[in-house]
Length: 215
Image 1: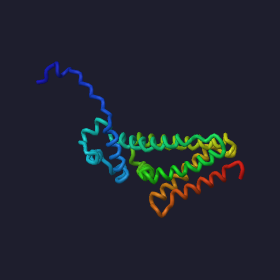
Image 2: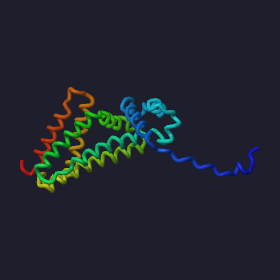
Image 3: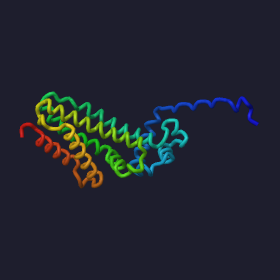
Image 4: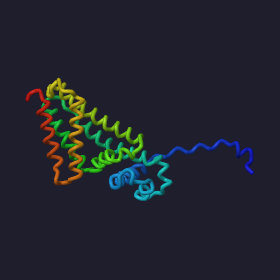
């Protein structure tokens, strides 16, 4: 028989999940697995085995697989953002032209160092109907943030008198973003047979030629 005291007791609150240095180990393990097996093919049990922890221990750090995936995306894109922010410093036409070309070189270098980024984009495109709305919202925001960064770059080019003032910055940013994605996909699928760096450099020169005031 349950005593009145136990029956009416208020359930003890669940302790908050602890976040610490193990997060990075778990994120790295999840990154490799998502890249290898896709979103649906990666389970929490598989992540736990790869990280060398129990499945129960995962819940002290991440609530579910969606949270893992969002954390992986945030890690990769956060590292990219820091690199791009450091290179955005042009104050005149000569510096801007160099910065614009260097942006495409940097994109190629980051993909070569971590091809998981291109794999991530493929996962989102191919498995979007299987992925929950929380992850999709996160990825859409990341895409929009990327386009916004490119738009800021185009607008700086206009302020410095390099790009045509009639150029639509949002449209131009979308062109940069989509041309990068298409080339990254080709490179990921075809490997060394597709020279990503050379292709992106050529695209940068073409954009500069098309959008410059002096043609």
